[in-house]
Image (cartoon, rainbow over the protein chains, first blue to last red):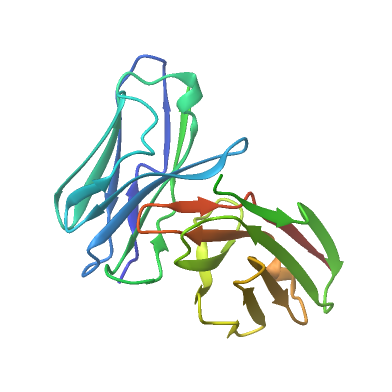
Length: 114
Length: 111
């Protein structure tokens, strides 16, 4: 298995533009997590899905952020409109559900909003 | 307030030496505690997962301990190698969506 796949790996955009980050979880995993990592705040959970259903989005910072999981093999995190303070590394992780299973992280998307 | 505090913030040791990283938490309810290794520019990689009833868990040269009474955990690295240079992050899970991250310890191994 190729592991969790994220794209793009790097994204540079201008303030006000829409940004879409993509994630393909490990096949067979039914939990998917979106995280954000910054120097100031460290790692933070944004949202997580169980069997394609959003379970908790309380970590999503603002209405500008939205996430979808249309099927078991694909998820998106969208920021619209983007702002400079959204600059961070965004990680997607997947795991089996129903217990303290290991989460496998993707390589991350480094987002820079100018 | 749910918090995870790690110490030290950074640590430099010589190759071959042992070291211990600390994690104190106040997360409640408690489900499990995880240690991750994060190399620069990469996603975190799981080292250990411990539930309430587990006191010690090893993964090669990494040994994690958990004292659920004092809400403390440690990660001991034996016979350090240059490849151990990374950030080590302690994560406490209170429930499926309550995931609290420590700020990490940045470990540098010098030859």
